[in-house]
Every structure is written in C-alpha cells, then in structure tokens.
Image (cartoon, rainbow, N blue to C red):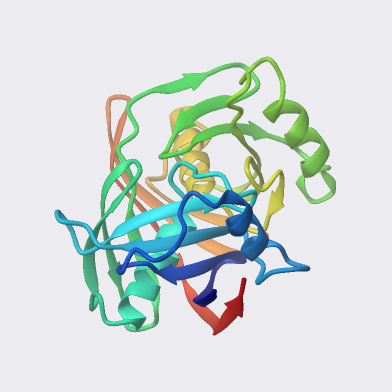
Length: 260
C-alpha cells in the first residue's frame, strides 16, 4: 500500500499529515502509525494527524502520538493541521474544526502564522512546587532555576510515571521566568516519552499557570521553546481563563509517498 503524506512543523514540533477524507487510512493499525513516525525506519515525527470530513465543521482532526496511540489535543499539531488544510484547499484563512476536546477556531495570517483557539480552563490545581491543569491535554508545570542544563528527559519521566499521575500520566513542563511577559519552557511529552522541541498545549498550560500563581500579571505571554517562539493570550475573570489563543508559525517541510 502506498500512502501519500505531508510533513509539517510548528516551532520544531513535527507531524506526519495525511488527508483521510476518503477514509482509506487503516486507523486501528497502531503499529503502522508508529512506523510512519519512526525517525530511522519511517518518515519521522512527534505525531501523526489525519484530516477527515466532519458534518459539523470544516474538518476533523484525529491525532496519534509517535508510539501509535490516539491521544488528547495537540496544540502545535492543530496549528499545523490548519496550515495543511489551507494548502490542500479545504479552507482559506479562517476555519472551525473538530478535535478530541471539541471545536476549535483558527486563523492564518499573510505570514503563515496560525492562531488557534484552545479550550477554556476553569480548574487549576496549585501546589507549593507545581501547578496542574488541562488545556486539552494534562500538564504539570514546574519552575526550575537552571533550565538550560536541566535533565528534562530523566526528571520529566520520573514525574510522568510517578504515583502522582498514575497509569494515565501527564505531560511535564519545566519553566524559567525571563521577564514580566516572557518565559522559557522545556517539555517532556507522554506518548513521545522524551523532550520535544515544543508543545502547544504545554505552552498554553505554562502561560496560564504563571498567571494563576501570580508569577506574572500579563494576559499575553511569550514562550521561548526549544524550537522557536510561541505566544499565548487569554481573558481572565476570577479563576476562569477564556478566549485562550495559541499563536505561532506552522510550516510545510516536504511531501511524498511511502510504501508500507
């Protein structure tokens, strides 16, 4: 079987994109998904995303982790899928699409910057040494001092597999404050089971966590991730965060076909 694919990246978070509007991709074949995401034997990617028809919106997003498991929302993947949908003429510069956590609105500007509306965040768990919240995916946010030299893979895995989060686990974010509106961020992603160059839901979670804990009063926050820069903005009323947007580049890398 030959599969036509497109490769996209958003601040270093890279994805295999497949147009599955005809429903020909074997969605239950997790070994195939893992193979396509393999950087040595396949195409390579932090995840694989199917673009499908949806009766209630422009298209549906089906997201797989690189290990082949279907997963919760992926922010950078969502932004890349919007850019992909525009490339194959499914949408123009504005869209609403369906994902595992509900409907998302997004726009693409003339420079290819994609702004994606994320879910509202109403429940935030604040502890003395970390914050936990769900931005479409579960995220643990923890401030560290020497972020540049921090062993993200080792420490992230230790927390992800700890009794704190049980079998389901969580994504783990380590953050350092740069100034009143800017933070640097490194993320360990479950499903990838390693540090990634960026994580959109993680950047969103970190921005909200830093505001919720009083680390910043800003409602538009710059995030320096390993693969580039993202911006998260939101409205805050009481402890509720609404009109949450994740903004950044989403770039086409290459396309091709692979025999499987």
